[in-house]
Image 1: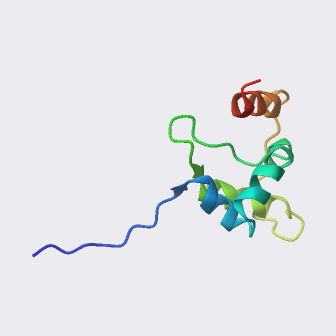
Image 2 (image 1 turned 30 degrees about the horizontal axis):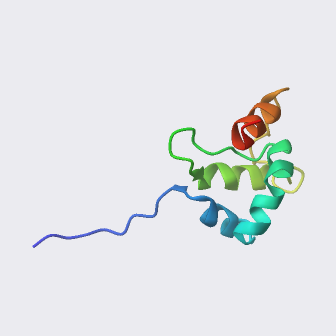
Length: 90
């Protein structure tokens, strides 16, 4: 007899990342360049999955005045452009 435990994955495919934001996959895909330009966490380079904890931290950081314990968003010049180039291959 084996006991199985339910495991909620932390890294998820784009469909579930979209759902976390209350969007359809199509809406998410359309908005992704804008989200990335605002510091939205990129996918894992190997799996192509999104980290739900990073998404939640990004969401909370948008409202630091209301949620002072939220982590600050890091902004690195060129990072968004590099992510978009990798994402769209151009």
